[in-house]
Each structure stands twice: as structure tokens, then as C-alpha cells.
Length: 262
Image (cartoon, rainbow, N blue to C red; front, top):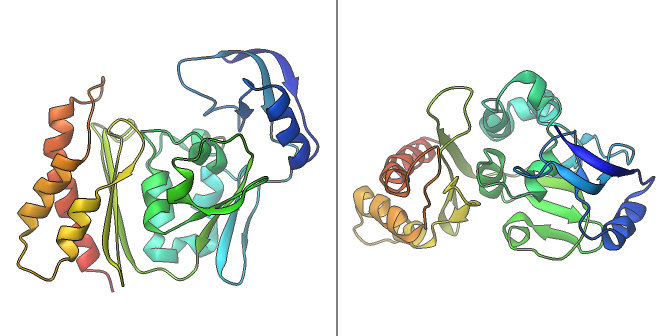
């Protein structure tokens, strides 16, 4: 059970940012979950529910997903049923149950950079951006290594998409994945992302370049390269060796799927 002594309730994003600077250890409370696994007692938490960030709207060049929009909101948003062949719906649908998806926020999932995230590989493949209160708009790929204190306001996914695919491996339907992956094929070549290592998702750069090369490269070489260049760890879901072995399978499925994109 989540326990805290003080609930901070900002009225504006700017006020939330000031609170984050003042109460340096206070996490953002988004939907009552995704506040940080393993630690449930906090002196203070910052409640984001009153900031009006629970929206999904269509702009000229992108879809804007407010930080407090839930995974369930994404799953039900009509344009996402067909956007990128339903990629975002496919990413959120396997996550636990309906009740959970109706609480867990997109901003909480992205800001925490959870290693077990189904959502981050999909958003990276789509070349999503994030809008921060203080630092403005930046690519999600850059935000993955961003360390400054800031407030995530919204996630932006471009309307124009190229060939993309995602895949996850689970022991059971309702379980967290033990391996996640995505791929994008565009004018620059192939970009492969591997997550649930169990650390945060990373791009398999060497494998992507190998797959993009015009020389003779077998899919088996690409699979082996991805498994070698990504660092894996062991946890209760899978061993590092098993993750490395299954990465080859994951990459094979991703490549085969993206090559069938029409």
C-alpha cells in the first residue's frame, strides 16, 4: 500500500515544477501507480491529477497524449485503432487488466523509463517526442538519458509513420514481459530497440546498421549481433543468458513483420 505524509496538489504545471524543485525527493503521483516499484513510503508526493493533462488530441502533424492520459485512453482513442496499423493499441492491450490500464498513465510510464515497459519500445519506433515544462520538446530517444528535474507535460507521436513493428515475450498473458522489442524501417535504414533487459530499452545500433548495409548479410548475423551488443541481466522473470538467446528470436520476428509492412 502506498503511504505518504504529505500530498502536494499543484494547480498548474509551473507550480508542479516548483514543487519538484523544492521537495527534491517527492515523486509525481500519476494515476495512483507507477510511482516507483519497491518503495511505497514517501514523505511527500506530487499529485498531477488536477493539471488537466488527461487528454489525447489530434494536431496538424502529430497526436498529443497528455501525461495523465491513461493506457486505457490510448487503447480506446479511435484514430489509434488504425494509426501505424494499431501499433499503440497493440502495445498497451497486453498490459495486465482493464482496471489497471484505466489507472496507469502514459506520462508515468514514460517518465519512469521502466525496464519492463511495453510502451517505450513502441514510442521509440514511432520516433515520438516528449514536451517538458522547462526544457521544451525533445526526442524520446534523447529523453531516455535525460537527468534534469522537469515535468513531463505530453507525449507527441508523429502522424507520418514508416514501417514499424513491435513484439513482446511473456510467460503468461497477464504477466510482465521478460523481453520487449520494436523496429523501424525508414530512409536511414533499420532501427531495432530491445527492452526488458530488464533495464530500460536500448537501441541495437550495430544490428540495425548491419541489417541496413547493402552488402550480403544474413538475418542470422543480425540476430546474433543484437544479442551480443545488448547488455542483459537476470531477475525473477528470466536469466541474462535466456534473454540473450530469445533476443535472436525476437529480432527475427520483428524483421519478418516489418518486411511485410504495406
